[in-house]
Image (cartoon, rainbow, N blue to C red):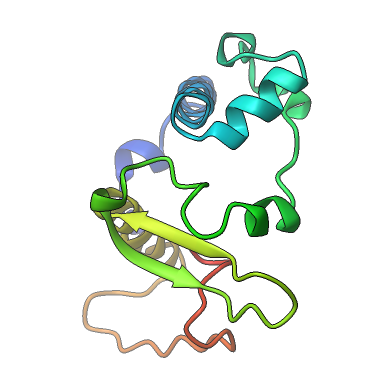
Length: 144
C-alpha cells in the first residue's frame, strides 16, 4: 500500500489524538487573537482558548453560520494579514453579500497535500491521469 505521508498515516491512535488536540488549540487561539468576530463569540459564550483542554471541548465552541460569514464581508474573517493572502475565492452573492475565503501560501500547501493524500489513498500514482469534476464553478467553498 502506498502512503503520501507514512508518518501520519501509520501513527498510533494516541499520537493522532494528541496532534489533533494541539492543532485544535492552535486554531482556536489563532482565531481568538486575530479575528474580532471569534474573540467576541467566544467571550460571549464565556470561553477562552485556554478552555479547550480536550478534543471533547470542540462541542462547546459556537458554530459559525453563513450569515456570520456574510457579515464579515469582505476581509473581517481573515486570520492573517491581507498581504499574506495569495488566493481569494468568493461566492457570487446572489442570495446576499458574497462570502469571501482567503488563502495563504501555507493554506494552499496544506490543501495540495490533502488532495495528494486522498488521491494516493485511492490508489492514484504519479503516472496516472485523473479528471476531477466539481460543479461549483470558480467558488471552492467546500474545498478550501
